View 1 (cartoon, rainbow, N blue to C red):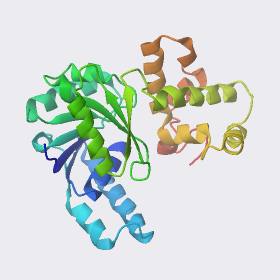
View 2 (cartoon, one colour):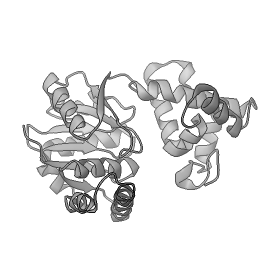
View 3 (cartoon, rainbow, N blue to C red):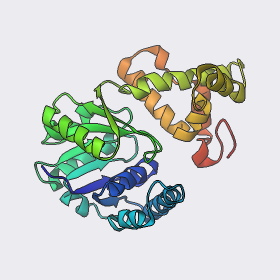
Length: 282
C-alpha cells in the first residue's frame, strides 16, 4: 500500500518528535492529543527544532516551511482514522493503550497498520484488543526522535511479515535504521538500559558515589555520551519506574526490582528535566 498520510496520537515529547520526522520526510501528518495545551507546546517545539536545523544548515528554510505546512494538529481523533498509517504515542499505560487501539481499529481502514511507540508494553496484548493483530506492531523511536537514528520494531505474536516489512521500509524513508526485537518486556533497548540505570540509582542510595561521580565514571571509563543518571533525568524518572515495573512483573526476576530511591523520587514529583529536579537541578 502507498502511505502518504500519517496519524499520530499523543503530542508529548515522543509524539511531537515523531510528527516532525514524518513531516520532514514528506508525509502529511495529523497530530492528535486530548489536551490543546499539549498540542500547542508540540507545535512550538517542532517549530523550534526545525529552526535549529535551518541554523545548522541541515535543511533549508523552504524545507522547514514545507514540513510545517504538512503538519496539522487537533483534539478530535476522527482525522486520525483517515490516515494510511497510525502511530500511538500516549502515556505508558497498558489499559489506556488497549482502549485506544480498540477505538482506532474501529475507525481506520482494514488495511491500515496500527503501531505503538511503547517502550516496554506487550505488542501482542495491544494487538489482541483489535480485529487486525496481524497489522499491529511496535515502532519504538529513541528520544530525541529528530536526532536519534534507531527505530526498534517489535513483532507481536500475530504480526505479519508484510507488516514488519512495511514498517521497515517506512523507517528507512524517515532516515532511521530499523532493528527487529521480539515481544518480551522492555524489548532490546530497555531490557539492557533500565537495569543499568536502576543499578546506578542503587549506587547513589547506598552511598557508593554521588550522581556526578557515577555519571563521570560511565562517561570517561565506558565512553558513554552521557551518564545513566543524566539519561534517567532526560527520559523522566516516572517513565523509568514504569518500564522497570513492566520488566519486574513481566519477567518475574528480582534483578529488575525498581530501586526504593527511584520510587521515593517519583512520589515526591522529582521526575528529572520535565519537573526541574531529579538527580540534578534544571
